[in-house]
Length: 120
Image (cartoon, rainbow, N blue to C red; front, top):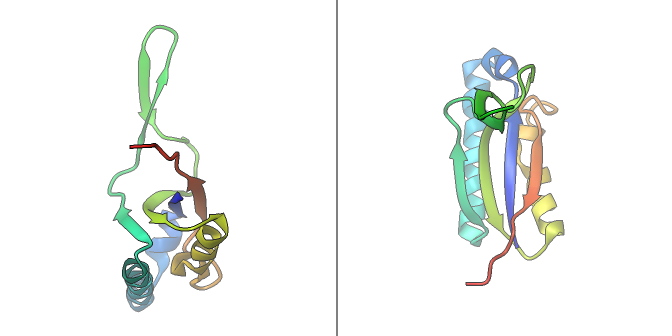
């Protein structure tokens, strides 16, 4: 089963990390990703460059706004997709993600979304 892991962060918190700590965290995440690659469970891992835009239907036409939430302090900063046996393994991976464990969660949170499976 495939799972999308959405990684949330707070820009103010991330920018407040001393360079050495940020480098250490990035190194931990790289090692985490490499371990999942070697196990065959990591499908992709990508950072997101810009803030998203939200497209919703207005009264007469679709409206584009900053999004998804105007007042959010946290936003999705990156994501990865794993292909694992079950939800238990997906949650085990999510709990081990270095960004949420670093300095008691300074890296933000992580959402786990099961992806729809399609017969090919």
